[in-house]
Length: 120
Image (cartoon, rainbow, N blue to C red):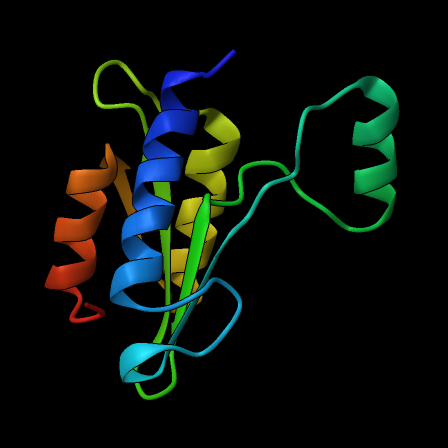
């Protein structure tokens, strides 16, 4: 079953691959991007991730520009997607560390944000 956020993620990944390049590789304009996915969680898998240093709430997409720094996008579905307390806490920490962070509702909003940051 496709979740509404999955559909937005797929649409955005397709657009980013066209505009920047493949995930995990430095592409056009010196930008590297990839999606952060911790997968489905169970108590056992959550404990294993926690033991490895993983934390809840990391934004969905990471972007690094070789000359301007790092950027994160938390992608939500177009209607009704809300940030969890763990996500809010993580985004504050990233901003405090000098990263650019945005919450975007839908792939189109994410593309607009990336353009505003000058990454596209």
